[in-house]
Amino acid sequence: MAGHSKWANIQYRKGAQDKKRAKIFSKLGREITVAAKMGGGDPDMNPRLRLAIVTAKGQSMPKNNIENAVRKGVGGGEGDDYVEMRYEGYGPGGVAVIVDALTDNKNRTAGEVRSYFTKLGGNLGETGSVNFMFDRVGEIIYPADKADAESMFETAVEAGAADCASDDDGHVITSDPDDFSAVREALEAKLGEPERAGLVWQPNVMAEVTEDQASSVLKLIDVLEDNDDVQTVTTNFEVSDEVMEKLLASQ
Image (tube, rainbow, N blue to C red; front, side, top):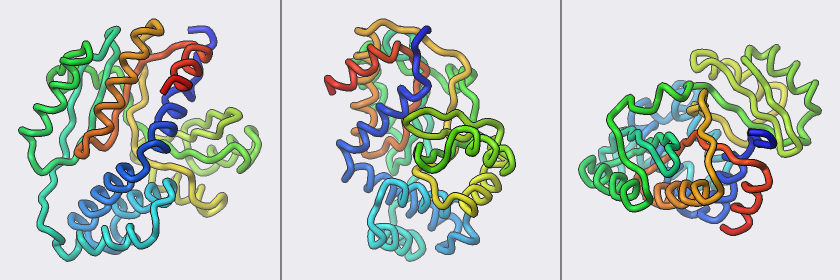
């Protein structure tokens, strides 16, 4: 769609996180704990833990919180056994939605996620029902003032990245999942820690929706992200910059 901003979901996600900082810290802590429990407490020897810590730092999570989450994981903590779950479905306007969760009760989380979809005009599908509309990629985000677009692109390519898209809001560097760790480490060596880094779902097919449908999708994202078990929510909707700005202002 003309005028569509590739930053729409990033801007919305950042706004939502700013409003739900305490909940974000809780979810980051859960990921750190699970990573430490699965692979040990040394981030140099545990790539998943290192990524979780980098992500937590990028969200300004206090050092003490991070250390406590690691200790809980390596020491067994409260004994919570979390499992990773992925839910796929369609939201209002036929928008594809992928929900990744860490839960200690699969039946509870599945029931809650299904109810959100149903109440807000969507429907939960089977595994594989929408993921073909997304590519799994590594995503590394730096602020706009870190470098100009040309320099950042050159640095990203030298680090082994597949692409780098820049805007006034920042730089989004993408890579093949298998290259992600190497690319992130090369960029950190030159530029320092990023604002955010991780493996994400990148839409390869966009769903063009109306303003009302976009508003309903944002409501669905809100209730999903408000669930303690949900870690990330990814969609493939697009609207014009003007509509997105209007919707963000109304949040």
